[in-house]
View 1 (cartoon, rainbow, N blue to C red):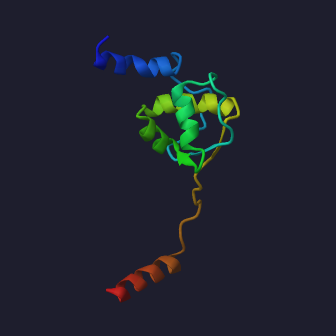
View 2: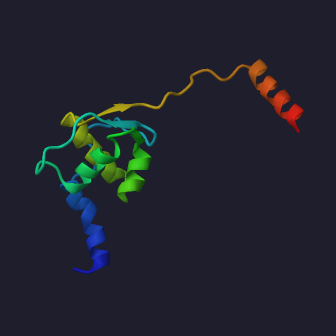
View 3: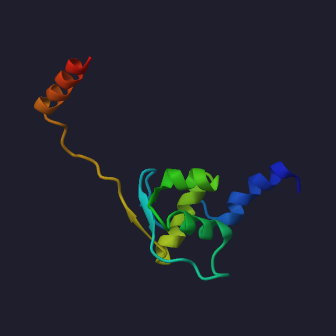
Length: 116
């Protein structure tokens, strides 16, 4: 098999043919925390690498996808498997529901103008 053909097959093999994660809980900025390591022989190299990357600090789904050099969809399938098996936990990025107060924005703008 030629090198470019392997690149096309690999994501399919990594996910066992699945195109969607078992859960739809992963956004690009969802933070992933490894809470336990995989036992030798029970996880593929991509899963072990994912757990290793998240062992010391949380990473977003986008960061993991880039570090693993895998498409985002493949990364989400792997993360779904790891979440189902209890190897990771997730935390959604906090989104402010309220817009900042106008007084705060004006204060920042005034401070920036004063520093010029």
